[in-house]
Length: 298
Image (cartoon, rainbow, N blue to C red):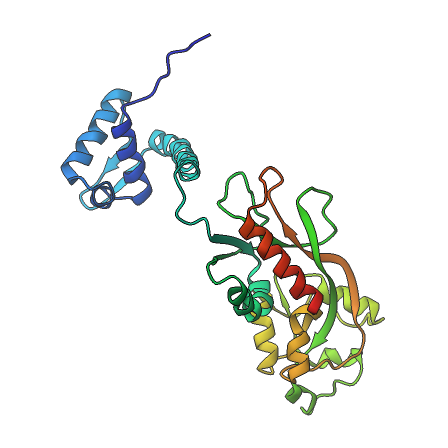
């Protein structure tokens, strides 16, 4: 059964999307490579087609009407979907571009120090990194591979364990020489405890394993991501609850020290993720093989 589609003039629709997204007739005209007058006429045509206003026009600004805002939200998603589908259909000039999405701390403290070795083995592959704590949505994002911190092993296809998590407190060597003691876990009450806002339970987990119930594991200085907290610890601000894979090299170099021997494993881990509906490309298989070699090497 066929239906007559109610679709407004596409040039007018494209102008509307650009103006609403950019908040300016001038910027929309620049993006579309037309005059501002042409964009204004297209918007007027679209408003005439709907028989209602889409923008409130002030002397120095424009603002979407309630109906215009609602329509823009739907149109924006459709244009985004068309853009992604079109890019997939077009002959790709970036077949050697590898898009990776991963947490910022993993990128800064683990991947970046090793990335030169990947480039040396695969010099023609260009790596593009996006940092986020959110899982990749492969149906909506142009991402080839993701790395995720998962609190429990994910029962989903397309995930491969990189390494499990082990908690260990770390601090600067200078902190051990301060006037405040740090000889036993209970001495942590004399020092600022540092952590990432994305990992609010790490201190509580470790303190419980250390049989310390006199310290609130949810109190302390919290940072947007763990990489900032590690830097603060290295600068002597306090004691950071670290993850062993991220502090191993700093412990070996002496930049950080572990005041206590207790290491506490958690159920969580870092996982490599792939699309479960796409076949792995050669560049992705090369990256996976290299990454697993690096993990095995420690």
